[in-house]
Amino acid sequence: MIRLLGSSEQGTKGAVIAADRARQAGIEWSRSVVTAWLDGSGIVAAAIKEVDSKFNQLLHDARTRQSAWDEDEWRRQRTGAEISLERLIMTIRKELALPVSN
Image 1 (spheres, rainbow, N blue to C red):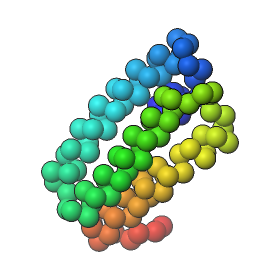
Image 2 (cartoon, helix red, strand yellow; image 1 turned 90 degrees about the horizontal axis):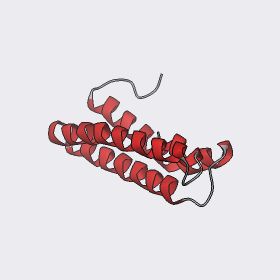
Image 3 (cartoon, rainbow, N blue to C red; image 1 turned 30 degrees about the vertical axis):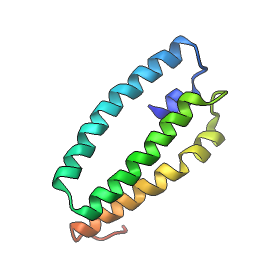
């Protein structure tokens, strides 16, 4: 949803639709985050907080950019969020005593 928002020209119908979809996805994400904070260990909760912060920043950047993101810009913009998500996955796998790599 963030990618769609970032690739839509501001002020267009497509941007409004993308923003609405991002809000709906954000509601579901927030529910999942709260559940994990309540049920997860401290280390998992900290990793989720980092992911949440990175995705919030990415969403903010998508909403306030001056022009639509092309493929290269999207890849650059999402790097921090991807890294924090990978850390979260590794943290959860360790917590569950699962192998950390395939």
